[in-house]
Length: 443
Image (cartoon, rainbow, N blue to C red):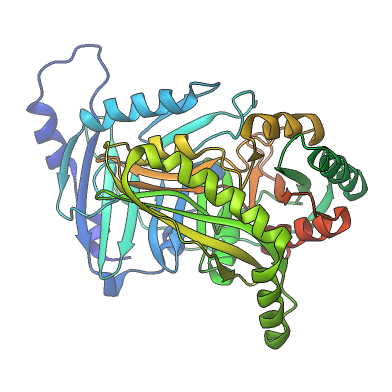
């Protein structure tokens, strides 16, 4: 850890506080300080995370860049249909009233919050925004440290203690969640019937697995394994939700909006020549192209009211991941109305890639056939800074640590169902999508 991480911030914090008018019993403003770090001395971001409970560790890392954080300086929890609006209002108030010294000035510096949002308004899970006490970030040849508090002084930055090497899970077992594979295949068959009868065009059905370990699950172990094996995904940890998503719901940076749409999947074999042939077949598959078209259209339609111009490619490309390949399209636009990244995520959620089309009917079919609460699976997960810039992925290839019993998790995976879907093939696809988290827990 570079020496700069141990620098004293007490004088800075106290000077800021003494310059404030007496607020009495009102909430104290957020204090945030960002300083530059020497990139050459910085370990891999995930290696910086100290030993802590799953809910106290934060990550948003792809190919060695992004941010990690720990501790809680402030947080907001919201539920129900207005959960997005509640988070937006709270963050605008906190960020707008923050006292900031930012010596770096790139997106993700200054005040920043990590968030994850329940898929459904009716979910027992909440939507949360958490401001960590400490954030370390890296982008290209820039690296930084941000410390944040709502107290009288900024937190001390203590390097991870020696001996806090991440520990591997032990005695991990898996069990069916809400449905067995056979039961879930039956739900898929029912969905195909509804589609062929003309009730809807596409629906995404998910299944879950229950995980038990003989010791509490160390989130740092999972993050390190996922970052090593899936470096072209966004490896995240927010409030106990952990995963590696390949799908960017909404990125907003200095007026440019991007959304990466994935829909249409085929499992890899590990044989490069065979996988190239499979990729070609995926690119020609009428079933997968149909599924992908619905997803791209839903994203473009949701972004268009916020953008002055857009680019929607006519043909998808094939995204190669270690376990599967996806049809992918990057939709881009120029922001016209100043909407924040969180507002854009709200406009896009849920896209056809995780719900279906028409949206309202697909949502009802999901409620009728899945037989489980998705909680934060398939909901937005990511971060936002004080300017409103940020990145929000879709919580895929994910698991949720049980806050009451950290030796337990639930894993989730889903598949897009259209008229040409085969139930057994969809079970196999869902198994492939569970591989990242299963392997991270057992290898």
